Image (cartoon, rainbow, N blue to C red; front, side, top):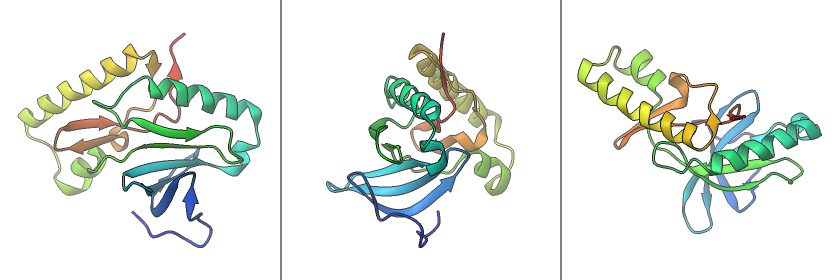
Length: 163
């Protein structure tokens, strides 16, 4: 998590930005809070992508698809404005380190029992994702967050709807 920079907006939609969570090929992700106090993650797409109608159409489709997944094993989509000058999507904030951080930096190899529990949770997550008609296409350790309730799969930015 990083402090907001001079070029970062103060608000996106109804959300007050608190910090930067990260950035990727599609845009930046911010930690934000609603007026009612709910903590969320808001992904703001890159301005140059927002200018391309082909991208906007894909973004609209992916937001609709991600809304169908729910939130048992993923971060639920709470709000979005796919028609804004710069489109964005808000999801529930998932507190927990990524699997990449847990294994790569913090703890190293996990005990067998932990791996089995993690694998079972990921299998349930993928079942829910596929049941909603999606293929994630970027399932990797940095897109799996470890929480007290089990793993959560995040970042549906390049998900595709099943044909």
